[in-house]
Image (cartoon, rainbow, N blue to C red; front, side, top):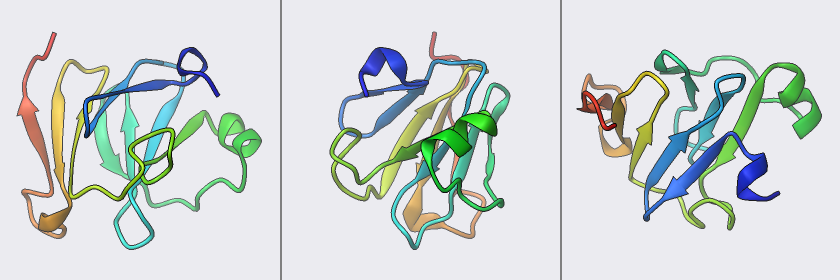
Length: 111
């Protein structure tokens, strides 16, 4: 799938930029890490079951972002920055799972 067809783009070695208001992103960073849903209003935990395929994801207005795949970052990341459509850049630090530092605002306005 080409970059222009996806609801996100990647930048650098660990930044995901949400660009499509109609679709929410579900960031999957390996099997053992919590899934994160990126909406137009920010980030939240993704507690639902993962869609079985791309068609099911589209029906639920989701786009899956599998971090370790070759077309994203090719490996599980310890630290990811996510720019959401609410004008904020979030820092997701997987070494701090379960604490209030796991997901926090990195920049209030990145634009």
